[in-house]
Image (cartoon, rainbow, N blue to C red; front, side, top):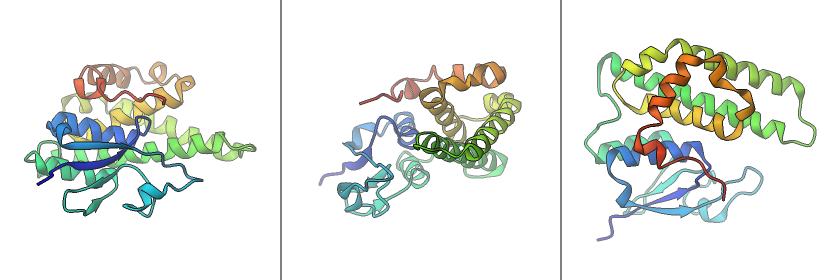
Length: 205
């Protein structure tokens, strides 16, 4: 029986990166069959839509043909395959991990909307300013929590925050976030030493 998990994947997507970091940490990469898939907002992809009518990545097709989306569900599913290592099951560790998970995803949502707006032929300055304000405020909060991120058990929370910061490096390098959040930058530098993050750096192509 084929036990491969088919993952609609892109080396540019921070949500895909989150899934792949988890896969590396959990040792399930050999079970994944990566299908290079482009999910553009203005051009729905028929191949992805055959599995996920939202035409979004990541999308995971299990061996029995059932489909899981989005990254939140896929990461927890992969974690269940490995016995539950990245999602704390109880206590304050669980709520903090889930909080950082949600916060990191929310930061990514804002960053992607910001990028889409700035690439319009006539972007709305008010929207650009609002996105920048939210991102800078988010970075300030994370900087204040850098020691907590360092002390917490490694989990889906720090993984997601790390992927969001990596996306800023990839798409918003001019923001210069390290200069304004030195404690967060130091934590991030330590996180980037993990092989799972080194193996999933976003690339063009």
